[in-house]
Image (cartoon, rainbow, N blue to C red):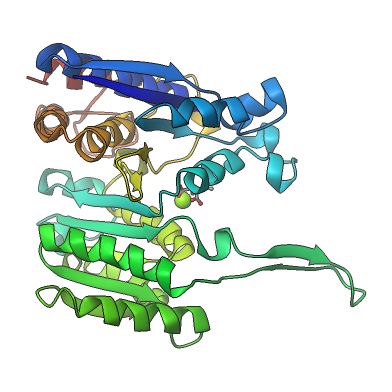
Length: 357
Ligand code: IPM
Ligand code: MG
């Protein structure tokens, strides 16, 4: 079968890790006889440097002609002085909105063999953990009314957190459906003891929950959730939360798994179109050194095969390849395990590809 993929490598380590994912996809195409057609599109700082726009219209057009987007990372010091609309981050935020991919799925898995890479005490994580964040991605404070003024004689700025019940309902359904496929446990995270938007969030999640009586639903305040994750990550299955809380919790979880370089994400909406990116950023400090961990990007490609192309077997083969390489004792320099055999970005991707069969 033939699939059209838009490839947005972006800035910093984005191109290196996406190249790693392409090595793996090429291998999948050979082994399983699929054709992946890649269309490179410019995003982020690179796009700004070329056409003064971090998300050029041409990029959006090419993406809309594709079936999925594989995204690297955007941003870097070089563009930090730019105003909001021209910053590289605008590319990812604008794309999420343009594609209306409201559901951001971020699995966080700690394999028992990786336990020593986690900063948590061994007695807490010796059995590993396997949870998944479902983050609302196109609403909330990220996209609410924002501004600055000096009306009162002092400089002021504001960002509004606003959710309507439809936005909450659709992300809640997405999380409940995922929980049904997993261990049937859903924790919704909010700040309903203080925020009006969170009170509505909780009300709607409770309402949607009535349609999924098999799923055990509980609610946690964000501060408590941040603490519980460190106390006992194993208590969680699916975590449903808003855009900003999901952003924060997913970085916390990534660290608990041993390295932020390992975590993939899928951003999906109503159709099969999806945006797939590692959750790590552009890490300009290690750019071009062939040391970035490509696993987050490679596992994002696996999520793409599964969600956008319905290629479950192929996605499984990629995960198998990744696990195999870890079992063989290889890793990248960000994974702090005694005795691990360190590979470069490309070598890691090559070895994973070799283990796909
Ligand atoms: C993420 C990132 C982005 C976000 C940034 C780059 C805008 O941190 O995907 O988690 O905040 O969503
Ligand atoms: Mg983030």
